[in-house]
Length: 179
Image 1 (tube, rainbow, N blue to C red):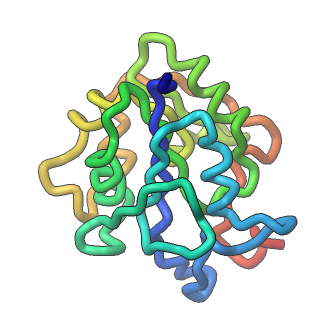
Image 2 (image 1 turned 45 degrees about the vertical axis):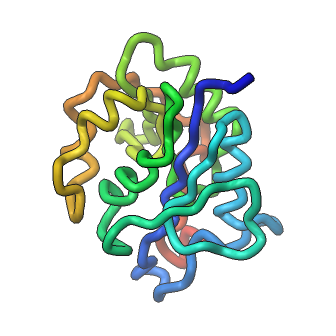
């Protein structure tokens, strides 16, 4: 029996502020950031990773946005092409504090809304830590997703804000974040 939940991990960014390193493969406490995201989606089937294929990551489906590195909305559109479930969890591949409990809390908070997203300590929505109704998410995508703004694409949907637990919304964008 399926959970009715799919997962998408966006793992194709350029990591410019980290000198172009492959961020999803950075390790924290012996686990790569990509493995953390995939593990957080343990209740999802399938888990789709949008980005270049990486060795050592099993149990996922791989796809790419076209053209590669054309932004998170294009990556989201590419991932959604492989999703049939009514709900989809969307995570970035650079999250150090996300876990299965995060996904469970977001799913429990969804209610009748189109989506539920984590909010950081300052109350800002973390667009790449959320659960969405797949049909509503697809309908919000622009005809040409290349370079489109994720905030503009998603902010018109009905959204439940879920406050992050300490460190839960932490991502890795700079060398200081990694330390």
